[in-house]
Amino acid sequence: MTIVTTMCKLLIAMLIGFYLYRKKILTKDVNEKISALIVQITCPCIILNSISSVPHDNPAMVLKLFIAGVVMYCIMPFLARIITKIMRVPAHLRGTYMCMFIFANSSFMGFPVVQALYGDSAIFYITIFNMPFNILFFTLALHYFQKDAAIESHQLDKLKTDPRNLINNGIIASVAALIIYFANIQMPDIFYACVGFIGNITTPLSMIIIGSSMAAASFKEIKTEKGIWPMLPIRLGLMPFITWLFMHLWTSDPVIISICTVGAGMPVASLVAMGSAPYPRQNKAASIGVVISTLVSLITIPVMAILLGASQ
Image 1 (tube, rainbow, N blue to C red):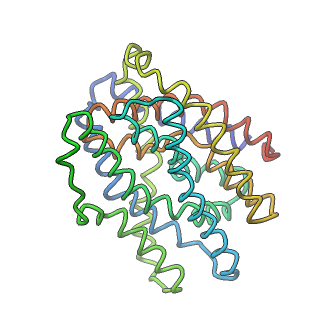
Image 2: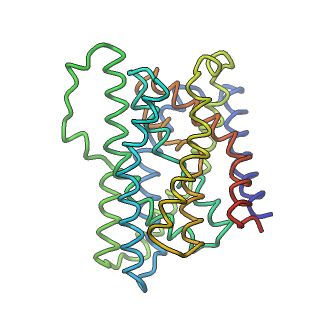
């Protein structure tokens, strides 16, 4: 019943967002500003807080899991590019769809789900495995959105990548988290208390924004975004299956394999919609992808838990 309770909490937060948009308490402009708050402030805080409970009693295993995550996230962009070419995704949306395939909602939804299924220690494992996620998102994904928008406006030749744009709060928090952990730096309790306090609003706030985005998306828009439908079985089925196979190359521990698989089976990361917010066409596709995949995942996540033997 723990997985049912967790999914109900996430669904209720989405319904609240849906209601607030219908009542015009939330608007597209407000959603964009809250998305910026999550990307620039609360998400970096949850990244820093995620290492607060990570033990140092088996650094070799942790390093192995971290390297597995690095390799996995190096492979994912190549797989995503192949898939988008097979799907014939338009050039001005190719990077956006690649992000939908690469980035699962392994933090905002994955954390409470794996915690419900495997206990508090599961957050430690999924955090280590997904540490490369943050660096890749705040570099590659933000570049993809910018590139897609440049292609759409026929200004790709004017697109210049400023290295300074790669330095943002998410990157700083990700690198800091890696240094703090692997250098075994003892941070004061008040540090984790503060970043944890801010970071803890990330999951409910992101689910509320997803619900609001759901209310903002018209049925006509969802119908016209035809690439979303073939994306769903790939994001919610193929990607976790690939992760399950991949993790068998690194460990024989069924719990760790299942934790990483469940994390990879989450819907499109809400950060994909939030990070693409400055680019209307890309944000439309990303927002619909997040909303639809999140709704479908309310069915696929319990099914995946049953298949992995973690439904009790």
